Length: 329
Ligand SMILES: NC(=O)c1ccc[n+]([C@@H]2O[C@H](COP(=O)([O-])OP(=O)(O)OC[C@H]3O[C@@H](n4cnc5c(N)ncnc54)[C@H](OP(=O)(O)O)[C@@H]3O)[C@@H](O)[C@H]2O)c1
Figure: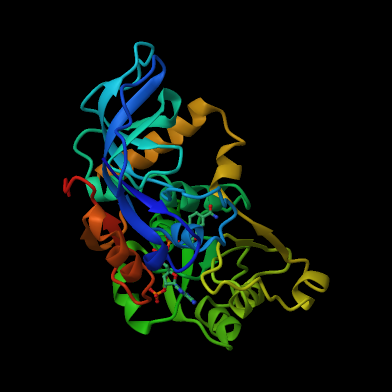
């Protein structure tokens, strides 16, 4: 079977290769084996290849924080999924043709779900959902501000916020994205810039914005902080610039703005397994109904992993880069 291997850390499309490795074999009593139908290339996977992600396992290593698979075999003690079912995997190392995992890590998805969208259910939808619920108890009509608003997480946050009756200020770096984000329910779409706080105040009528979601780092973090109300909460959940947050201290000292961070694993770990399955069931249902989705730019076969990684690194894409090991999508 084919599997992506990183034999040294470095430029993703130089260090990754598609290798032929032994089959995963039959499942033990508590295990599930599935064919990987598709996986996305997420920013965290790029950091992983570069060796700058929080997890840096000994080499060779296989990246891949998420995927969708179709179950081919289950162990005698596994009851919640059966061959033919679609699953996502709570564990990593998913850039391969097949996976063998603990039964509890295989989360079933509804039949009929779009496979491209299913490949992206594991990480970004719960990230958007939990960031909207776990930090500030927002009431209907309140505003949330976010940057990287056209990212997969950003688009999901727009839809989920809109469903909750919240209004969103969406900060992007390309003006033309307003035409894509408004139909999702985005109330305001603004291009990032030094005068962001003044424009946000003007466009929202001076609204008190108590939650900001931020994934660029550097001065971009500070620009979102400047838009928040006193005692507001700024959630830093990624760094597309690779820089640490750079926030004017007056936000903290004079205005009591709180800067905190989000990592999906940390916030899921606060919940019981049943609750986690319930969260995924709810999100997968919304994906099935077409309410939640993220655009896909291109799908590559697994042996074109280097081309896929180079494409994923380019800004200005029209959505995610996916890889389909068996060509199912
Ligand atoms: N903490 C967590 O648990 C968690 C979970 C999921 C995701 N994340 C983070 O969430 C962020 C978005 O992930 P995603 O999968 O939704 O991303 P994505 O769909 O691949 O989109 C990437 C976004 O980043 C923007 N971008 C890229 N480089 C940039 C730069 N130097 N300055 C400003 N913007 C830049 C892109 O803008 P253009 O379209 O204009 O190029 C695009 O909006 C990432 O930082 C990721 O690591 C964190």
